[in-house]
Each structure stands twice: as C-alpha cells, then as structure tokens.
Amino acid sequence: MDSASGDGELRERLAAIVDSSDDAIISHTLAGVVTSWNAGAERIYGYTAEEMTGRHAAVLFPPDRTGELSHILDRLRRGERIDHYETRRVRKDGTVIDVSISVSPVHGAGGRVVGVANVSRDITGRNQAEAAARRLERMEAVGHLAGGIAHEFSDLLGIIIDRLELIAGQTAGLPALQADVELIRAAARRAADLVDELLVFSGQDAGRPGITDLNSVISGVRSLVSASTGLTVVARFDLADTLPPVVADPHRLEQAVINLVVNARDAMPLGGTVTIGTGLADLGEGDPELPPGRYVELTVRDTGTGMSPEVAARVFDPFFTTKPPGQGAGLGLTTVYRTVADAGGAISVDSAPGAGTAMRIYLPAATVPAPRSADTAPAGDAAAGRETILVVDDEPAVRTVAARILRGDGYTVLEAAGGEEALLLASAHDVSLLLTDTVMPRMSGAALADRVHQLKPGLPVVYMSGYDAEILRREGTGDGDQAFLAKPFTAAAMLALVRATLGRPASPARHEAEA
Image (cartoon, one colour):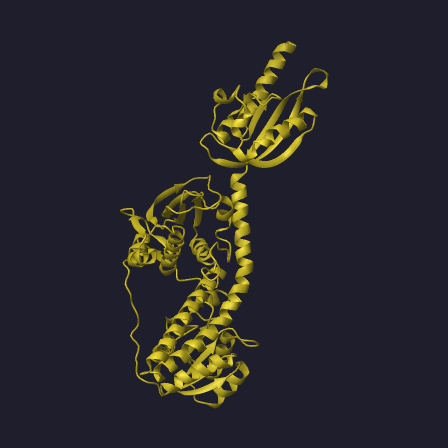
C-alpha cells in the first residue's frame, strides 16, 4: 500500500469518527464562515451540512450574544484555545439551547492560524436537571423552617378558633360584636389556609394519594374556577374525552388548579381568557425531569402580561412574588410544584412578556381504572360523653382548649403536660381514652401510648398534631392504625372523632377528622 492510499484511508476513518460523534464538530474560517459540519451538528442545531456550509456562524447566536463571535475569533487569531465555554445558541427552529463549546485554532504552514475547530455539546438537559435539583434543595431547606413555624402556629390557631366559637355563642343578639367576630373568623380561616400551604410546601403534608381522574377533579372545581376569575376574565375548558387516571391527592390537585387559575387571573388586570385543558403526552428521552413514558397533561394558559425569563426562572421559588406587599404570600405556585412533584410529575413554564403564560403539568398515567368517587364517612354516635379522657399536650393553651371542649360535652378530663405525668394519671384513674399530642419533648405521643398500653391494653388513642398523619406514620412517630385529629381543630371535629373512637372495638381502623 502506497503512502497516498494509506493517508486516504486514515482520512476516511477520521471522517467516520467525526461524523459518528454525538457532539457538533464544526470548522469555520477566521471570518466565521462554516467550512465543515458533521452529523452531530445537524442533530444539535437542526441545520443540514448543505444548509450551513458556506454560511456565517453568526446565525447560531442569540440576539443578546452576537458580540461573542468577534471576541472568540480575536482570541483564536492570537493562537489561544478556549475549553468548555458554556453559553447559549439558537437552533434552526428558534429554540435557544445551552451548549458547552471548546474552540481551537487550526494552524497552517509556518504555524499561522488559518481556521477554527469548534466542538459543541448540548447541555440543556443537564442544566435543567441541575436547576430542578437546586430548586428542590432550596424548597427543602426553607421547608424545614416553614414546617416548624406552621406546626407551632396551628396550636395558636386552634386556641383562636375555639375562643371565637365561644364568643360567637355569647354575642348572639349583638350585631356589632357579631360582625367583628365574623371578621376575625375570616382572618382565622385565611390563616389556617396559609398553614395548610406551608405544610404542603414543607413536605409535611403528604396528602392522601389515590387513583384519581384529572377530568373529574377539574369538573369538580368548575364553579370555583369561574368564581375565582372575576368579571373580566373568561374561563374556558378544553378537556380530553378520555384520560387514564393518575395517582395523586385529588384535593391537592384541586387546590393546584385553583392556584394556577388565580395566578393567571392576576396576570390579566385588564381582562382576558384562561384556558384549562387536559390531554395525553408521550415523553421521550429528551425530558430531563421525567423518565420516558405516557403522561396525563394539564395546561393552564392565559392571555396576560407574560413573564421575563428572569421571573419565569424564579416563579416556583419559596415566597417569591411579584405582587405588592399584602397581596401574595409567594406560596401558591410553590405548593403547586410540591403537589406535582409528590405525584411523580413535573411542571414547565412557557412565557414571554406580552405573550401570556402556559403552565404545563405532566403526571404519570396510572395503569388501573379510576374508581367512581364516593363520599363516605363513618356515622358516629353524637351522644354526649360520660367517659374519662386523658388529655396530654406540652402546650398549656392547647391542652386547656381541648379539656374545655370535652368537659363541655360531659366528659371527665384529666390533663397532663407530658408523658411522665400522663403515666401517673393513667395508673391512678379509670381512663377511657388517651388524647395526646404527637410531637412532645422527652416522650413522644407514640411512646406514651406504648407505655399506657402496658398498663391498660387496648385503650383507645387519638393522636393530634399540626403535622400530617402520613408524615408522622412514615417517621415512626404516630400509629397509622389509630385515630388522628389535625390541628387546628374545631370543637365539632374533636367531639365527633372522640365519640367515633370510643364507639369502636379495641383495634380500630384509622379514621381522620379535620377542621
């Protein structure tokens, strides 16, 4: 084999290697005119080699980065090499992508720089995945703090709500005072809603996921959606005829839809249209946040002011809001993000100033049919109590409120500030039920129940906490087979659960009551 044929084979092998690379391998002149374009460049940028050869590389630069090319070429003329430079480029279809670029000068005879070799890698997926991970880390960090605050605040709200009920009964016939009481009640309800949002955001409300039909969820909140949009915004629904079910908490999905609609309404101060749509989406390997598969898609699209890229990048951040002080807590979209993540899905934002916003939620399609929804609730005996109940809570005000509610319904109540005191009372009295806070210093509610059951096997227990029952069960703090009362609670919720629990056999099924 002569030298010429050997060189030809080598060039062919090198050309084959270049063409099989997943990276874009491009060469161009010092003036920026493309001279070679491999198959990887076609896949990343969307242009064929025929379309780009002889064309200026500036077509790949976004409008805000056109100055990069002259700066890069100046450095290359001086013989410098630039490694792993991260920037942005534009595909043929107009999509802006993140790329990592390494450029090297090509030397000719005498060492003179005669051209440029460019190797580009699409890192859009990697950057999106890293951004999602950073967002989740921020949410987790702030969530721990927010969850603790919500837990303490729920105790205070319980006291406020209980006292309001007492005052409301004592001010009958006094319209002026009744009006003030209703204002305070409305504020307390709003505060309770904020506590719920904090618990969802912090991951301390696991919800109650189940097989759920998304169309049914949206149909169930149609009237609420219409009421939320006001007079100047038109709500339209574009629901797919049939959808596979998803595994999610339907109540949290309802709240997510309302939050998205309210956010859309606020983006249309002069009026407009918000469209709530559902459909199916088959996602491939290109999505950085979700594995390939079939997903149920929920889209909430508005014709509002839209968002800049900087705002859109922060829209799910905890407590971030563009609204004036007092008009937004910055938790609405954060709790939507948490709800979607807890259901194994992802949410994306498509927005631009003046072009409106589309929020798209993708939830994994379940493989089992959705059952018909049916509201069922155990019928408890509403008769007044005569039993003795041991109330245990390290917060004196909460303990006092619970005891007063129970005594007002005819129960005998023993109060304890902690586990050791409760054990002494349990050993000395004929106790019918233990009502205990779940998270307490020195002895948790679960540990106390274990100790009490050594003295009184089969004694019914009701746990109460500002934390979600499922979270407590996962962490081993609560007993998932026992009754659970969520704080803040109303007198009616407490009495109904206590009576239902006392009326059960010794090994009751789990029942929950919430205010």
